[in-house]
Amino acid sequence: MSEEANAITRRYDALSREECCLSCGGALSHALIEKGHVCLDLGCGKGFDVLRMASLAGSNGQGIGVDISDGMIAVAKENAEKLGIRNVRFIRCPLERIELGDATVDVVLSNCTINHSLQQDLVWQEIARVLKPGGRFVVSDIYALEEIPPAYRLDPEAVAACWGGAVTREAYLNHVLGAGLTGIEVVEESAPYRKGEVEVASFTLRGTRPLPARMTEQ
Image (tube, rainbow, N blue to C red; front, top):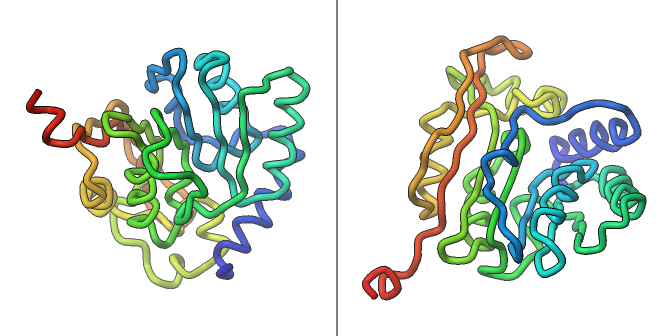
């Protein structure tokens, strides 16, 4: 694991037992989860959105959480146990290599997590891979108004603080489109604000993995 990933993991292990909100957006409110859906939260933290998704999906659906922090995964499992929610699963793995099969997920959700990756193109390729054809994603994240200077992009603490790894809006959208996802819409977007040493903004994106051509022609 890289030093940047180790720093992020240490930060979230430390936060796992604190009362704090780690999210920069409300992706879940735009997810339109239905009964029977298999739902995935990337960077699930303490698992609250996973538990909500599992409840919305019902007993025939499932909520799955992915995080790189052992501490967060442990707390998420405890929260599921306390609430008696059984149709959940938590996986410790990097976002660039999601440990799920191809085309197994109806909805992918993420809040302020993908910016931590220095290989964000791979994260979006993984999102496209695990989504079923016709499945959708809703992702809230930040982007930088200008390219982050290399000194900060390679600083583990700046990356862990949710700004060192930010890319520009154009680069972010290019990663999404480059993964083959379609129907991209910006459902929310903030005004620019200062974070760390740079100017950033937050947005929430929604889109889908397209159906195969033969299905759209029927």
